[in-house]
Picture 1 (spheres, rainbow over the protein chains, first blue to last red):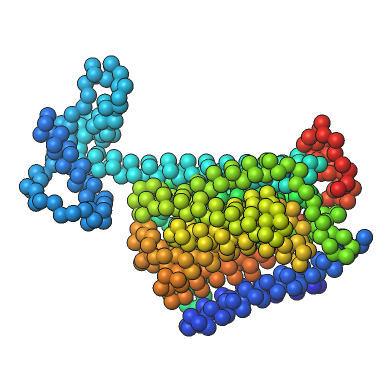
Picture 2 (cartoon, chains in turn cyan, yellow):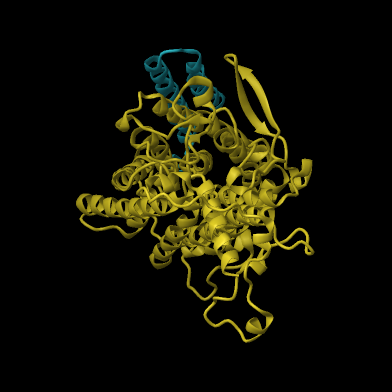
Length: 61
Length: 546
């Protein structure tokens, strides 16, 4: 379940960045693209990686 | 005879004037000469050629070889005409570009050997055969996937590649409309290199050059996944990367896709720019490596129960550094070769691109060595090698758009970034990356993409435009308003958000199909015997466990 959430959050970061193209001001575009990148990174590091670390081989001893 | 040779010289001068008006504009004004006499076909046909008698005596100084007699004529009875001469000039230009691109492609192909020994050297001896075989077979598996479908997806709609004579058959891009603008999604010509007239000399040259780039991407993943990746999983994963993931992003960046057209459609600089592939090649490889390494989990013994990371030492640092040199050598094909020519459309920047490449590699290795020396009191060999590669990866995208000072800065940052990123991936994310590929190719690939938006100096001129937008690629530090940086960041967002997701889903599928990881027993024994059936070093005494 966490993996599915992680995939969706990571992909949504990309969608947010693409949506910046609908804006006209470059300043706003920049902020939205950076937000999209941050969301994707959170999906990768904060959700997906954490999901795999939960059952990591080294935690089982 | 004398008059004929003069008229031939006049004609050549006239042709040169047509090809190089800019260079002539730089020369001082000459004394007005007499109006040149119009050249006729008769003048060309009467150009002096060495006699058969003279040629039969040999040509030790080369003065008799390569003369008017070597110009291909359309009508032997008529002899050489002005049309024949002009066609020969055109063919010579394309021939120079073909040879340049092919030789550069051969250099890039040789990088496979560098990757193979870098990765094998960084592994333990008990996995040498397995690691080497993965690096060996990415060439075949990746190429098969790319020939079947990957090339068509990537380049099937690229349109005219002027330096290679036009590539007219590659003209079918699938386009959707978003925000009222056309978004190129994937190419549709070139399946099996025969589909829709793609059995074409220009297309073949383009295929070879692009194929070796794709193979570089696939070989990056094997480094992060080595010592625990099931061989069958590696084969399927590599096929999917070469057939779909890489070509899709490469189409968006290089094949006429939507990222390349951010400039024409949305006024973002010259669109997403990636001269030789920091993003297209290295980030796609590094980000896929992240997805696979995360899924595989760390090698047994890499982390203690407390989470403390243990260093698992390389078995042969000599071949690691030799491999780094081979890669640095191959990079001279990677970056300068990406002009796809040495004649016309600004291709003479190949010298500048080659120098930028070597400077960034130098500063990358220097920065990494200093960082490790200051932080750990020793100049670490493997990290110095990774610093060299990080500098080369980072300069790959901007190499065609920046000056030597910027190249050194980009390399210096890359050298430090790779050390910090390796520590972050290892200690914070707790992802086991035996060769540091996620940091070298993923992190520094992204840095290379961003650096264009900052350091592109606006001095390059590849035929007057880039990605269909007139002018030169210019970054924030050289007067751009920020549009170029946004285009580059959109590329980064696509790599991190889309390419990662696609790679991750593909590898979940592989995991479901055959399982990604070998058994604990095989891993402890070493993968050479259980996976490959033979030891890499049969005469060594190998440890069963680390």
